[in-house]
Amino acid sequence: MSKKKAPILPSSRKIMKELGENLKLARLRRKLSAEQVAERAGISRATLWQVEKGAPTVAMGTYCQVLFVLGLEKDLLKVAADDILGRKLQDAELVPKERAPKKKNMNEQH
Image 1 (cartoon, rainbow, N blue to C red):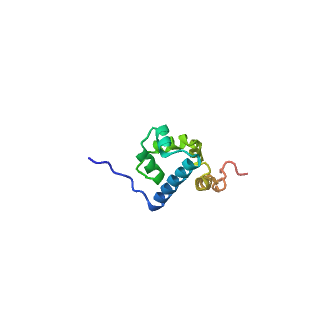
Image 2 (spheres, rainbow, N blue to C red):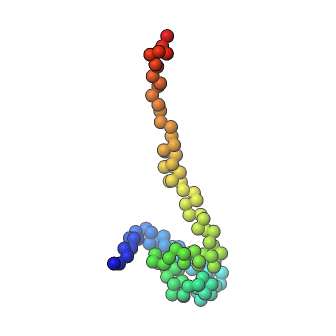
Image 3 (tube, helix red, strand yellow):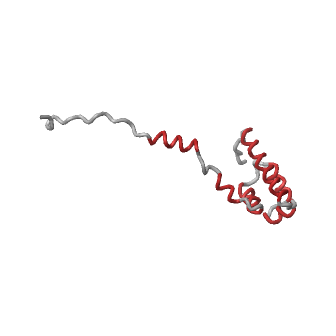
């Protein structure tokens, strides 16, 4: 039985490609060769090439390893840190609903 792959939307592909490009630029800014980063991350140069292309088939852990080698692993903590949409949705449910006035009990009426 073959594994089903989750479909990657074009917008997600674009984001992955940009992530890969950003990682490559970070590597070049640090004047590290692909061979150095791959060795330090414990991956092959071919896998690093896939990471730098933003391949969605590469495991998230591999991206994390490359980020670690580049000293950027804490950047992952920025993901969803300022979840504006989520907070708005949460706040929408927190608005107290107006209640009907309490009914007076027949015994309490004077």
